[in-house]
Image (cartoon, rainbow, N blue to C red; front, top):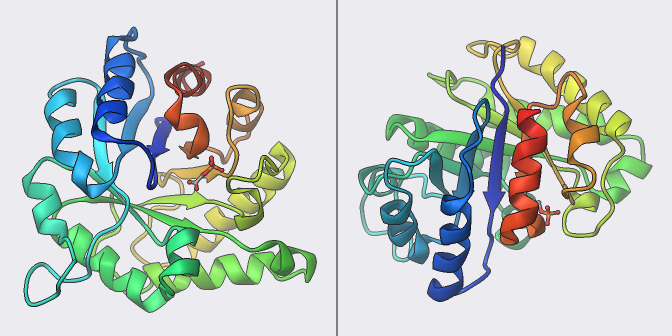
Length: 248
Ligand code: PGA
């Protein structure tokens, strides 16, 4: 049985005041059982979020990390530092980082190894662009991203995959539940071919315009084990509705 996981990716949004307010709303809601929950604020808001979440069921993650643990790397934040302050999760290879920071599969693989070494639980994002889907190469792109990040890793016990079609992120264009399920089943098949991955036990999230109104139809799909939520994770009522849909 794969426990559903719902992760809020807050991206470069908010202020300390709005982050505290949002966390306050989430923490005062009735705890939901049977679903794992996490929020991923910016680096500067992580410490406050971890303090506020304390021993609650709300875990905290980072949106990225360095591929090294320490050294002369100005501006970087290491997985070991994140783990030390109480971060549990780290998102890796988000399409916005692939696009705006030019992150390659090789860099994402190095970050994944460093994150696991520091005892963080990694969420590795994969997904095709609209052009790639229209050209019929979506599966080839996604399988190459998976192999590039996961092959040869020493420990993939806690890895989570997030399938996020780039054309669905922040656009309001969600993949249909059938489209998402088809790719997520394909991803599970790819995982079976990667040594060190327990494909049946590995959670595969869907991300890309997940909202309160479409979450339930996505979560009933057999290979959708939760969601990585952007915009809707910034509104407490919407995020809570998605969490409740995952628990249902
Ligand atoms: P969205 O973002 O829910 O706003 O589409 C998802 C993501 O980028 O993780």
